Amino acid sequence: MQHPPISNPAPVQCLQCVKGPDHGNVWQVGKSTLLRAMAKRVVEIPSFFHVVHVEQECNGDDRTALQTVMEADEEREWLLKVERELVDEEITEEEAGVTLNDVYERLEALDSDAAESNAATILAGLGFDAEMMQQKTKEFSGGWRMRISLGQALFVRPDLLLLDEPTNHLDVFACTWLEQFLAQWDKTVVIVSHDRGFLNRVTTNTIFLHRKRLWYYGGSYDTFLKVRAERRAHSESIAKSQARRTSDLKNFIARFGHGHKKMARQAQSRMKLLERIQGDNVELDYDDPYLRLEFPAAQRLPPPCISVMNVSFGYEDNRLLYEDLNFGIDCDSRVAIVGPNGAGKSTMLKLLEADVIPVTGGISRHPKLRIAKFTQHHLEMFDLELDSVTHMRNLQSAVGEPDSMEEARKYLGRFGLSGDLALRPIRTLSGGQKSRLAFAELAWRQPHILLLDEPTNHLDIETIEAMAMAINKFEGGVVLVSHDERLIQLCADELWHVERRQGDKPGSLTIFEGSFEEYRDMLQNKFAEQNLLHVGKGARAK
Picture 1 (cartoon, rainbow, N blue to C red):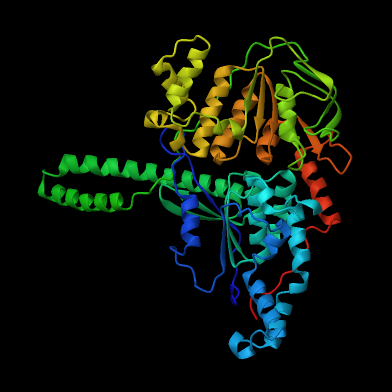
Picture 2: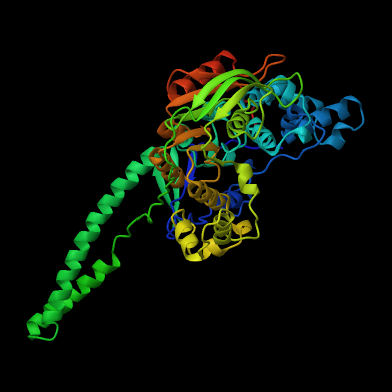
């Protein structure tokens, strides 16, 4: 029932990997596998440590989101149950193995009376409003259930918290709140994440998982990159010196190894020295070839490519999601749409693509406009039994282009899908590899406008950097929905902030006059005003 605290809590740590040797294909290096091994205690962890691994969404049932989070504290639930049974005289203290007074003392130590308030604060920070907190978990989508799972873990405050890509299902609001919350966390957290900004603000140590070995670095992710580069430069210098010395020794041994007796002895001595140097060779920490993505654009169109005029939209009658939208998109646009989940960011992209029709107003598009869109839903629409080469050949055949296998394989190789990987059924590909196939399809379409809906999910940091460079080189317009700070900072010139519908008031879209950093500062001020970062810290041990 009790979990003694960690005597010297470790700082927050992150795990990272680099690309593998197959032209940028990410190795299955095992970051998630390592977290699972820690959760199952295959990796030796003291038995008294309370370990929580956030990996899967919570089960959907008739319990409310608030109730589900509160009931995650099994110790508190057990104490409340024993309290009821003792008070109602259903069992005796001897049968319970604990006195009623002991139960009351422990509940007080856990700050049980504040449990509901603490759970509500955590859920609010993760984007739940009061109505959603009372909603049954079975009514939520998978992304929102993942937030509930995260809320459960934060609520029980384990000694060791294992987070695997915690930002994948969060918007900017929730990501920023989680950063602030974890900054106050007084226990150990191990995080696997592709979000560079999140890692920089949350972690204080980095474990680099590279070629089946763990390399330990102090500091944030950016500090790790700097120190690693310095160490690599130092190692390369030593390796060059060793190579020169080895070459000199080999030349001497070759010249005098079978000559005069005195010189032969010196050659034998140098041979021993050579063996010692070769045994002490520096192991170089090298990177594999960097992935380069490219999104070619169609010939530029005169502005505006898309005009949105007095548009209102809603999925339900008399319940508008937006109203009075007025804006334009052209080939110079670089727009990031930010705001809370449920506000309709993805719907905004659907409006631009003409996937949904406005209730009022109109949207005009250039008659020659070509749009290419990336969504996580698109990944689910692949024919999973096909391989990547066949998928690309089918796209070519559909528009009357020659469907050359050689050209398809060469093309996919530019997106890190080469060798046998390109011939494997799509269902066997990882989420990141499926995203690369989707990027290959986007590039093949040569659009005027790119619409990107959370493109960084399932990608490693290196691929995100490559994608950002490709977007910056793209000569068409870009509208992206993302919570990834670095991608937004590198690619977006404008921030469009959307607010979700409140009661009878439709949602809104406004242009945020400032940088993304200033936008984050605004969110942090909101957290302070709403007191969303103050959560009681009930003791886990006497």
